[in-house]
Image (tube, rainbow, N blue to C red; front, side):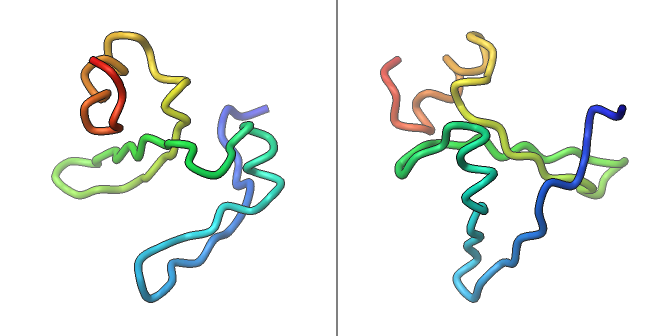
Length: 74
């Protein structure tokens, strides 16, 4: 089994927003106001992949760097 799979297809609306399906939110324990880190991977100079990760899943050193961005305590 691969580490990655397509779990859902989402659509970007006119305001640039997406809706995460209820099943995905439940699987990750995401509730209203929950924070996700958007991670962009590059292939050379061009972006190729976007990943979303619950902020609570980030390692401590990364989380401490990102806390000001996410409004957490330093």
